[in-house]
Image (spheres, one colour):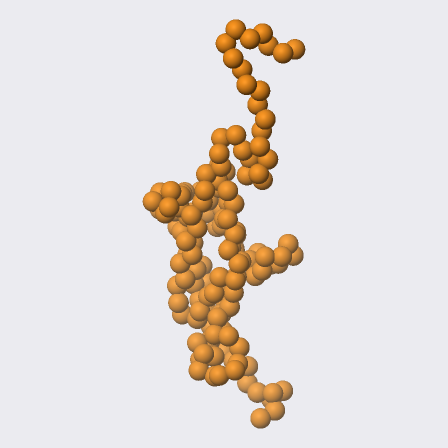
Length: 141
Protein backbone atom coordinates (compact mmCIF):
# COMPACT_ATOMS: atom_id res chain seq x y z
CA UNK A 1 0.00 0.00 0.00
CA UNK A 2 1.34 3.42 -0.94
CA UNK A 3 1.93 5.56 2.21
CA UNK A 4 0.95 8.74 0.34
CA UNK A 5 -2.57 7.36 -0.13
CA UNK A 6 -2.82 5.77 3.33
CA UNK A 7 -5.52 7.15 5.57
CA UNK A 8 -4.07 9.08 8.54
CA UNK A 9 -4.53 7.42 11.90
CA UNK A 10 -7.32 8.92 13.94
CA UNK A 11 -6.04 11.10 16.76
CA UNK A 12 -6.98 10.32 20.32
CA UNK A 13 -7.16 12.25 23.54
CA UNK A 14 -5.57 11.44 26.87
CA UNK A 15 -5.95 13.29 30.15
CA UNK A 16 -3.59 14.56 32.83
CA UNK A 17 -3.96 15.52 36.50
CA UNK A 18 -0.91 16.66 38.48
CA UNK A 19 -0.96 16.25 42.27
CA UNK A 20 1.52 18.45 44.14
CA UNK A 21 2.47 17.55 47.70
CA UNK A 22 5.29 17.83 50.22
CA UNK A 23 6.50 15.76 53.21
CA UNK A 24 6.67 12.50 51.23
CA UNK A 25 3.22 13.06 49.69
CA UNK A 26 1.58 13.64 53.11
CA UNK A 27 0.63 17.33 52.69
CA UNK A 28 -1.11 18.70 49.56
CA UNK A 29 0.16 22.05 48.27
CA UNK A 30 -2.36 24.59 47.00
CA UNK A 31 -1.39 27.33 44.55
CA UNK A 32 1.52 25.54 42.87
CA UNK A 33 2.12 26.61 39.27
CA UNK A 34 2.10 23.66 36.86
CA UNK A 35 3.23 24.13 33.26
CA UNK A 36 2.57 21.43 30.65
CA UNK A 37 4.54 21.74 27.41
CA UNK A 38 5.43 19.65 24.40
CA UNK A 39 9.10 19.45 25.38
CA UNK A 40 11.72 20.58 27.87
CA UNK A 41 13.42 22.97 25.45
CA UNK A 42 13.01 26.70 25.95
CA UNK A 43 11.25 27.07 22.60
CA UNK A 44 8.70 24.30 23.24
CA UNK A 45 5.03 25.20 23.04
CA UNK A 46 3.33 25.64 26.41
CA UNK A 47 -0.02 23.87 26.29
CA UNK A 48 -1.33 24.62 29.78
CA UNK A 49 -0.45 26.79 32.77
CA UNK A 50 -2.40 25.54 35.78
CA UNK A 51 -2.66 26.12 39.54
CA UNK A 52 -3.32 23.45 42.12
CA UNK A 53 -6.45 23.58 44.28
CA UNK A 54 -6.62 23.04 48.07
CA UNK A 55 -6.31 19.28 47.53
CA UNK A 56 -3.00 19.83 45.67
CA UNK A 57 -4.47 18.70 42.33
CA UNK A 58 -4.74 20.53 39.03
CA UNK A 59 -7.90 20.40 36.98
CA UNK A 60 -7.98 17.51 34.49
CA UNK A 61 -6.70 18.63 31.08
CA UNK A 62 -7.01 16.98 27.67
CA UNK A 63 -3.86 16.28 25.64
CA UNK A 64 -3.45 14.87 22.13
CA UNK A 65 -2.35 11.23 22.02
CA UNK A 66 -2.21 8.64 19.25
CA UNK A 67 -5.36 6.58 18.95
CA UNK A 68 -5.33 3.42 21.03
CA UNK A 69 -5.77 1.50 17.76
CA UNK A 70 -2.09 2.35 17.10
CA UNK A 71 -1.08 -0.11 19.80
CA UNK A 72 -2.58 -2.91 17.69
CA UNK A 73 -0.24 -2.19 14.77
CA UNK A 74 3.25 -3.57 15.43
CA UNK A 75 6.17 -1.41 14.39
CA UNK A 76 4.13 1.74 14.04
CA UNK A 77 4.07 4.90 16.14
CA UNK A 78 4.27 4.43 19.93
CA UNK A 79 0.75 4.26 21.40
CA UNK A 80 1.35 7.34 23.57
CA UNK A 81 2.50 10.96 23.44
CA UNK A 82 5.02 12.46 25.84
CA UNK A 83 4.93 15.84 27.57
CA UNK A 84 7.11 17.94 29.87
CA UNK A 85 5.74 19.09 33.23
CA UNK A 86 7.31 21.81 35.41
CA UNK A 87 6.06 22.50 38.95
CA UNK A 88 6.94 25.61 40.97
CA UNK A 89 5.82 27.07 44.29
CA UNK A 90 7.50 29.80 46.32
CA UNK A 91 9.47 28.33 49.21
CA UNK A 92 9.99 24.97 47.45
CA UNK A 93 12.52 23.56 44.99
CA UNK A 94 11.26 23.49 41.40
CA UNK A 95 10.46 20.02 39.99
CA UNK A 96 10.49 18.94 36.35
CA UNK A 97 9.27 15.74 34.72
CA UNK A 98 10.35 14.81 31.18
CA UNK A 99 8.62 12.49 28.75
CA UNK A 100 5.48 11.91 30.82
CA UNK A 101 3.43 9.41 28.75
CA UNK A 102 -0.19 10.16 27.87
CA UNK A 103 -2.38 7.37 26.41
CA UNK A 104 -5.63 7.78 24.51
CA UNK A 105 -8.66 7.53 26.80
CA UNK A 106 -6.61 7.25 30.02
CA UNK A 107 -6.32 9.75 32.89
CA UNK A 108 -2.64 9.97 33.87
CA UNK A 109 -1.81 11.06 37.43
CA UNK A 110 1.60 12.71 37.84
CA UNK A 111 2.74 12.96 41.46
CA UNK A 112 5.04 15.91 42.25
CA UNK A 113 6.51 15.89 45.77
CA UNK A 114 8.21 19.26 46.35
CA UNK A 115 11.09 19.78 48.76
CA UNK A 116 11.08 22.93 50.94
CA UNK A 117 13.93 25.38 50.40
CA UNK A 118 16.10 25.65 53.53
CA UNK A 119 15.81 28.99 55.36
CA UNK A 120 19.34 30.07 54.44
CA UNK A 121 19.18 29.11 50.75
CA UNK A 122 17.47 30.33 47.62
CA UNK A 123 15.91 27.93 45.08
CA UNK A 124 18.81 28.38 42.63
CA UNK A 125 21.24 26.91 45.18
CA UNK A 126 22.83 30.22 46.25
CA UNK A 127 23.62 30.19 49.97
CA UNK A 128 23.35 33.44 51.88
CA UNK A 129 26.39 34.06 54.08
CA UNK A 130 25.28 35.73 57.29
CA UNK A 131 27.80 36.87 59.89
CA UNK A 132 27.74 35.18 63.26
CA UNK A 133 26.63 37.62 65.96
CA UNK A 134 27.44 37.08 69.61
CA UNK A 135 26.34 38.90 72.76
CA UNK A 136 28.48 41.86 73.82
CA UNK A 137 30.18 42.06 70.43
CA UNK A 138 30.30 45.53 68.93
CA UNK A 139 28.80 45.77 65.46
CA UNK A 140 31.31 45.75 62.59
CA UNK A 141 31.03 49.10 60.82
